[in-house]
Image (cartoon, rainbow, N blue to C red; front, top):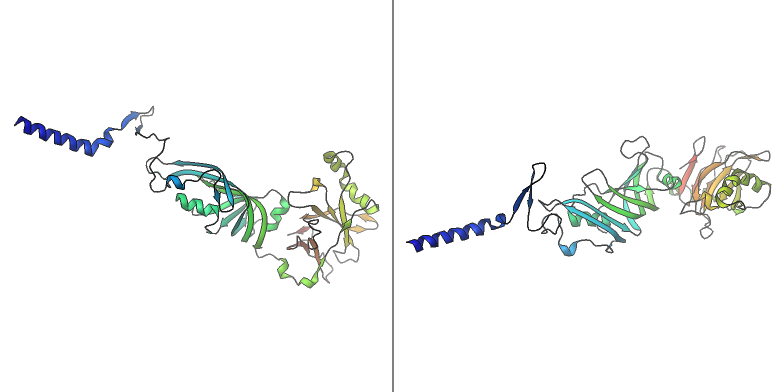
Length: 340
């Protein structure tokens, strides 16, 4: 009888160990706030078993990996221990990427994105943002990034603040961000491939009416000395006491008064950004004197002697003519200045 009871007890013990053994391996500790944390054989900071929301080890992104045309430079991820779902994720890439989508250039008084350009990108699987979101199942539904644009003349290519449109462009330094906050992806602007925002472009103009301006190297004549006088002091403070103004010049009647304006393309690095070689200024000219300069924008004038860098749209009207900048963008006179 005793042997029979002992056998039954052993069976019961084995059943209990089988059913509740994993729980018995856990130890419960009480933290200073009285909240219980459960410690398992694998700590929270250690590896966890891949489940829903977490890729297998061989799928995890590594520094140096290629995703589309980008290369991973940094990778950080945190999981929610209880569910193994992604809590935060950031992947930074270097390289130039091509992206399509819709953009919104927010006015400065917008509380959320004042004076910033927000891009909602298409669900192209080759774009890193889509690949990463799908891989880690982040539910990255908005698919958007803030576009960092360093120079105001580049921002002007997107239209006036408040403009929306469709765009295809090149970006760099793309950063995928998934956090439990309002922080979103970001990227640096490189160049526009195509844009449609309802504003006038070169496609809307009769090409025969465009006169492409030819610039000649500036000389130290009377006009050159007047142009140099506007800038030489500030220029020498930056480039040294021996600095001289490097510029090209053209003459065109822009306002229909039969008196040509002086158009100067300034080439010193003092005036330029990373993606242009000439800064265009227009000077009204009358009675042998230059008026106050009218700033236009930065252009790639000397890139292979670009013949379509800067143009004037012929018009019979006695008003300031439209300008074609960088072979594509139309700038118009608003009564005080030129704007895109």
